[in-house]
Every structure is written in structure tokens, then in C-alpha cells.
Length: 206
Image (cartoon, rainbow, N blue to C red):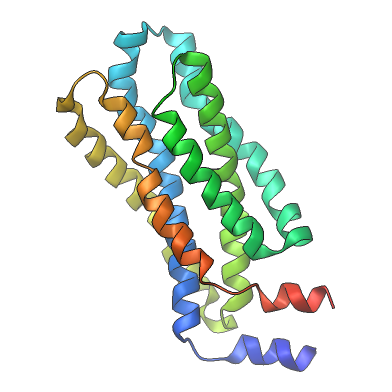
């Protein structure tokens, strides 16, 4: 087993490594997108739903609270059921909850949906980091990990641009903003579905 792990650590970067990096990086991009898009959506939601400071704060914090819970769940679930299975479940939840957010009917429903979205965000950080590191050769882990986590800021920036572009569509444009996260989620789901299970997870399972 030690010889196989050594071989994994010393292999050259290939197509599988690149696909793994993009699957992780675009997931991190999506995390930044979905966490940040609410900032623009609130421009429309606050006057439409007559949100005060307390309600606005709850809505803004719901995804962050969910992310805290998700960060505690993602690692243990992936250790038990496999990296790929939870990797796919995580991003599929992103897709469904993002779409459902566009149909929220009141403040409570949107807070719950944002909290569920946050669970996916929080779980994706340890999942992406673990899956990627278990594939990458030792010499490339730091460089590529820095690159993929930098994509979070790219997702946040793109969400602001998308939100501002949708604002002129009217008072219901917030629904499109929140649901728009389903598009990149679908792309990430497709990409992750083509990846194999982590060989290190298989080794640890015997």
C-alpha cells in the first residue's frame, strides 16, 4: 500500500488531475456565487417584503449558519460513504435548493432555503480540498489548492455583475438571481459525475 501511495504522490499531472481541479475549483466558484448573490437580491427584497434590520440580518446570515453546519458534516459523511457519493449529493443539493429559492413565498421559506444552501456550501469546502489533495501529486498540492480557492472571489464578483445586470428586469428579478446558481451547479454536477472515487479512500477501506 505504501508503494501505491508513493506512486500517487510522485505521478505527473495528467488529464484526471486537471478534471479534478476544475471540479473542485468550479464548486468553490459556485460557493462564492451563491453566498454573495443575496447581497444584490436584497436590493429588491427589502422594499418588496418590507424587511427591517432584524429580518434582513437573518436572511443574510442564514447561509453562513448553514455553512457552519455543513462544514461539520461534509468530512465525516465523505469518510463513511465515499468522496464521490457525497461530492455529487452536495452539488445536486445546490442545484435543487438554488432553483427552489427562486420560488420562495415568504421570508421564513427563503431563510430555510438559504440555510440549506449554506449546508451545501460548508460541506463543499472540506470535500473539494480532500478529494483534490488525495489525487494530486505532492509537489502540486499547494499551488493548485491556492488556485481553486481563489475562485471563490471570482464567483462573488460574477454574482454581483449578474445581479446588477438583472436588476432592470423588475421587482421579481431577485427570483432569477437566486435561481441562477442552478446553472453553474448543473455544470459542476456533470463534471464531478465523470470523476472516479478517491483511490486513497478505497485503500483505507481495504
